[in-house]
Image (cartoon, rainbow, N blue to C red; front, side, top):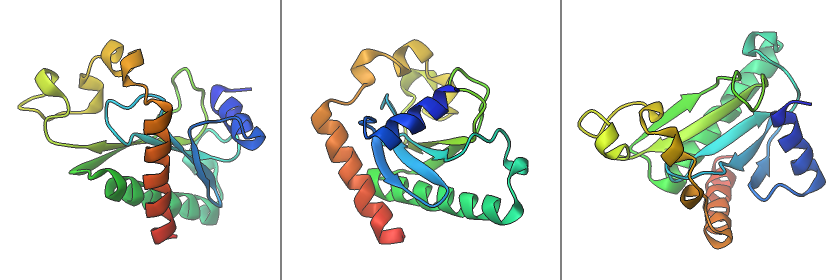
Length: 154
């Protein structure tokens, strides 16, 4: 079972503390690490590797939902710009899932080009440091903010 499928199973079992909402084609979850406050994942429900492997109508629905999740993230966390990634070749496994990063001016600090640049310019050891994990209280507040925005859009 891939790492993403393991997270889906946790969600189905009710043991994923980062779970926010189930949509028709996927699950909305807050990211484990929050350097980019509001970082969220939208995970396709089934183990499928490529977008082009989806039937056209299902793909269209999934992309529509992903876009609505991105809009909700932007609204909930006051993004200046949204970054979208659908990679699937990292340690989580080859499984369609979106990384949605709400970006704000200067969020890269000294690692950006005049404060701007892609998320991967920020050092991994800092991005995934324990101090970037939200507390239980912060996580619950973030989940509630995102859920309220999702409910407005859906």
